[in-house]
Each structure stands twice: as structure tokens, then as C-alpha cells.
Length: 131
Image (cartoon, rainbow, N blue to C red; front, side, top):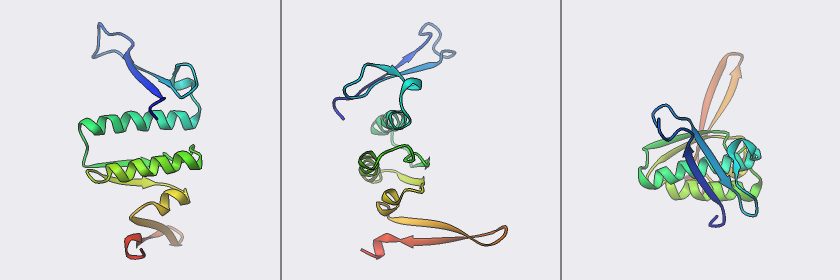
């Protein structure tokens, strides 16, 4: 939100190519914390916010998220899904998820089922055709 803030700093600005990066986040109503001090959901929101900030400047053709929504509550999952829809006009997103809210917000779902030991099958469902 507009009440959240985040800064990225080099730990050794005199040696930028060798320096590590420190991410400082200030979630609404909290003091600034390093990313390691944040909760799982706050870490996810901070990291995805930074990624989408980069996308505003230089969108990539595609992005893969692996269960990024797992630590988020329903309200934040809905916000995440809205952002994905907004950025999907310029980029394609592949999201591995077990979350039903995220699945329901997609255009196409690819389910993977095991029809017998060691044999998997891909089952595509185009949700746009069901609307």
C-alpha cells in the first residue's frame, strides 16, 4: 500500500560489484526491519513488491512463481492476484499453487495427475471458456 515502504541498500557502497544487498521494509504501522526479521507473509509481499517495481521499468516476457502465495492470508492473496492480472497484460505468469483463490483467478489451469506409479498426465482447463 502507499503506507508501506521499502529500501534496498548496498552493504558496501564503495565496492558495488562485490557488495551484498540489504532490504529494509517498513510495513504499515511497524518500524523498519530487515527482510530477515519479517514474517513469512511480509517477506513475500516485500519480495513481490520489489519484483513488480522492476517490472514497471522493464517487464519480462514471463515470470514463474512457485507457491509464492502460500504464506499469505486471503486478503493479501486477493491483492496479489489483482497485481498479477494487471501485469499479465505485458507478461505471462506461470504460478505453481495449491491455493483455490489463486487458481480461481487464472485464465488457464494445468493440473497434474498421476494415472499410475511414475506416469503423470497434464490436464488443462481454460477457465475463460467457462465464463
